[in-house]
Amino acid sequence: MKHFRIFFAVIFTTILAFYFISCEEEASEIGINLQPGADKIILASDTLQVETHTIRDSNIASNGRSISPLGSINEADFGLTEASFITQVRLSSSNVDEDQDIAPDYLEFVLDHSGFYGDTNDSISIQVFRVLNTDFDYEETYYSDYETELDTTASNMYLLGNYNIAVNPSDSLSILKIDDQSFLDVFSNPEIFKNNDSLLSYVKGFYFKPVTQSSQGGGIAYINLLSDNSRLVMHYNDTSTYDFNINTSCVRINMFNHDYNTASPDLTSSLNDTENEEISFLHSAAGLKTIIRVKDDDKLDSLANKGINRAQLQVKIHPDFQNTYGVPDQLTIIYEENDGNYDYLTDYKTNSEHFGGIVSEDKSEYIFNIPLHIQELVKNDGTIEVDNNLFLFPLKNRTTAGHCAIYGGNHPKYPMQIKIITSDY
Image (cartoon, rainbow, N blue to C red; front, side, top):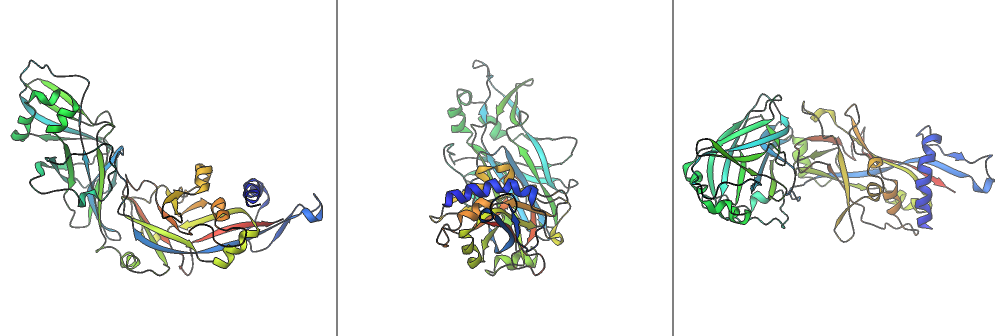
């Protein structure tokens, strides 16, 4: 019976696009004069009230991404955000002459940045380190808080230089020159050029770290490490060059740090409070996510004997916390199963485009279509079937730095809610 209801609900979602005109709290009848009276379908609109709570989102898998944010930005409402990364390099297909003595003149990191978050008039101050003793495993999963586990002492990190990345929309390349002689001498060793394993035994990786932006301002550049332009270039023997590639075989780890001590009082109080919020917060770069839970248990249970024809979670953006850099382009939702694991909603897996989550044209809200998920929440006997916790966060939370505030479940005027259309038949 339950599978029939779900199938029935999907069919009527399409039909309702033509028949449903108003979201008023009035029931309507479809089928009158079209089929026997016993078969008519009664449609009704309603809302499910939700609870929201902002929590930190500091531990997400962040290795293997094509884009690596780099920089530091300090914002009045969202505090300090820092983005760093680790990358390895690999030998290119061309090779140096094994019989030729190699005398490196200097090295250059060429970084292709595909975007920027912050004030384009500000440059980004960074430091580049050579990793001395840490061996990275390509098969291992690394997380966004890996920096807290990384040995950043002098015994493991050798500073190669301090740099400023100028963000110029007309020039997407940054070139960082390395002329540290002790590091150049490493590349005089012909063993480095035998194979990648030999290279990694001498050059394990590089750590790109921003200098903390102590005052308000700053920015974060989106470095495209997998761009054909991004590479490490060795200039040697006066006129020759050799490229070390950054490719999908390289371990690449995005790392983020947030300090909300100077953020908006509304944000800091949200992190310290477990009550249903008037305002909730979302912050990319493994910053903040919002837990959403349907609080109308009785109403939710009553849906067991109804078809869910439409269910839309409406997430309205709070205008008082916006900046000139824009809000996230898209949000996503996952849910927590009874065993503590996480998964995408059935609605997303069934039709990711119809699922929604893209910001509206006027940048005022996000809408998610989740009828299948609501239908799955209850059994035939009216009890809750799965754990009723949704987690809302920016879709690109591993590779971008955007944020926004949203109206929470307890807002007196614009509470977050799920608008539904049900059917009796």
